[in-house]
Image 1 (spheres, each protein chain N blue to C red):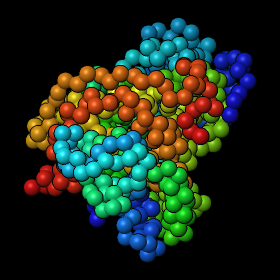
Image 2: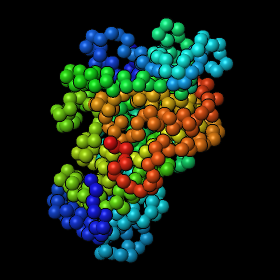
Image 3: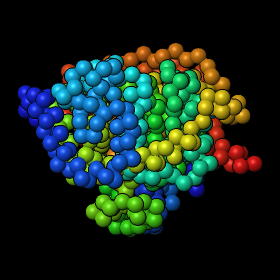
Image 4: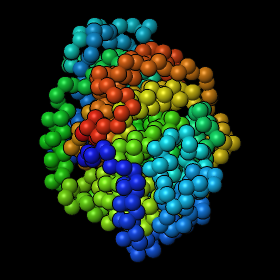
Length: 315
Length: 198
């Protein structure tokens, strides 16, 4: 999985571009996706043109072919909020390409209300937060930059009460507010493996656009691989505090992790969640050290199950 | 029924049930991490029902109140202990998990109705949830994103929900960052070998 570190960025970009061009005819049915990027001002199959749009300001290096790699490599701070949301939107479309929206619109609305309320207590209450239930019996949760948060229906079904779901949503929300995904993508881009990713996925991505190809490659890589352990520990810690700020029992996430601890990696419902996160025991140990009994005074709330909450809404 | 759905081992429990195993699969075996008291009710101040030695075995009932979980001792006493004083039974989970999952796979299609039709990779692994292959093979679906975005709620709607749900915002200090568990250095260095995916 490791590439020789000294390949130049230009070489990588050129290779990826050539690969993308070679498959350009396949791009037709990704046209809807590309329109957005193209509307941002770029010409199809031209990393340079898109760059001007994605980075903002005049395209000062037209023809030089700087692209997402360049953008990400400079710094995460150079990605402003509209671009962050746009990147998140693309990654969200990958996740929604892997599993559909769950058809229960009442459930979708409830998770949006719950998540939006928690997000209001976060450091970035103004993002256009979008919460999505994926129609999947497996157990997982994801986030994407700009405020996209996903949970599987299987995860919701296994939440003993609302505080567990709140803990999970709060964990994902802090991934977004801390821009963990953008930082992870930057590391991947800087490491030089991106072109390999793009090349290995070109047959399935059907996207003849360099920036889009790179973005999808990064996204697929990210969600299959997971974030850094440090980021997961941080989101556990800050997620617990965030859930408490929103009025939930902060031990919801602890309960989730304790049940995850008993799940085994070869249980097919948990495979990806376990493969992409530090061991639940390590997360619990970190949380125990961080929490001590600091949050025990916030645990007085009466537990409500998701079913009770949904049932109450029907009346 | 709903009570044990959340015990984490849904699939395991179902598989065991289907294989006519004892009906107590919902009671998780656990172990006391450090010497503590079995409390009559979920509070430090409540009466002690007796001492629990470190490493003694208990069964979790699935009941939780804040930071307290209800457990049963092998002697039949039931009471409450702090969540952080309860650990997983060492070594037991992987072994039983292997057996149960193997059984689950051989059952084929128990959960297949929901996800089987939407994935192409299920043939090789039987039934399972969303996996890395699903994401690797995913074709972007921007229309579904647009649909999801229509379901957003705004801040006022969220506050209204919190009001009816009796949820109140409160000030909570950030938690301190504990020392990292493993001394694997290289803070910001990208290194595929130390990613959590293995």
